Image (cartoon, helix red, strand yellow):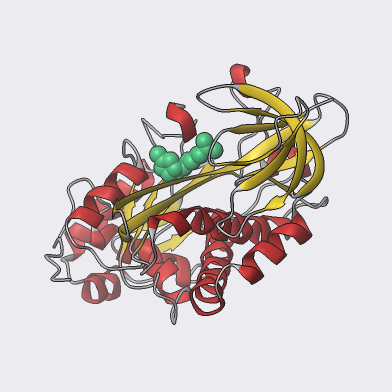
Length: 344
Ligand code: BTN
């Protein structure tokens, strides 16, 4: 399709702040001379000083002044596009990374970018969301710089019928990326909530959710946006969520690098997405069966827009829908969307 790419997007992080941050972070142990910085990022020395002040206002601890040079006291865990782009080289996600310090919802921005013709692989990231969106019209708590709030624009040549498989693909990628940070194995609660299970009735806590949205006609997806939210460094969850949600930091008692986790997430996403396009749904469903206790034999309570019922899971169908044998004797059905909880 013809693309009318956006030159710049209102509210995105200034390219020069990004360049300055990357330069200082990549030379974290040395003092970088003001003149050298000015030359590298294409501004005057006075402007460098002003941008350093901006970084300080954003909480980055930069030491020094224009005459001696600057160095960063601690490499900040900001999802700076330039740094990410270097590390994602060779994947479709390295080319178009839009970063916001604050935005309403990365999914909303990515959907607009999809409509504007931005290419496959475009990424939208935010340090904070003011109107983060969850499934079924819920909100997604998006505390500043504590979590990963990432939306990926995809242009798969598939029918909308197969779109639920994209959600599984993203869930598997998030599962593999976060498993390396946790001491226990994360579980995938269909379709793609990542949870840890401490046992018992109230022991399940969610730390990652995925919202897939798309623009399609009956037989063809124009574009899909996969929005991934991961609770990483929250030290406590909002009161209303604390019985059902957690973060990697709460689980492990230590902070985690959002940058490293995001890089791993996008590399796994690239791998699973390519596998899905080349080999179809079979390896995706097989992997889901390996890592999700909800795949088969789990007694669950399903809440859809229409009804709530209980039953036992019997696997996924070829399109990734959950098969549930109902307790009320009304047969086995494929659940298209809904909330799934373990039933006791
Ligand atoms: C869920 O309800 O489990 C889905 C949560 C999805 C949250 C992510 S955060 C990044 C992206 N932007 C949004 O507004 N939502 C998704």
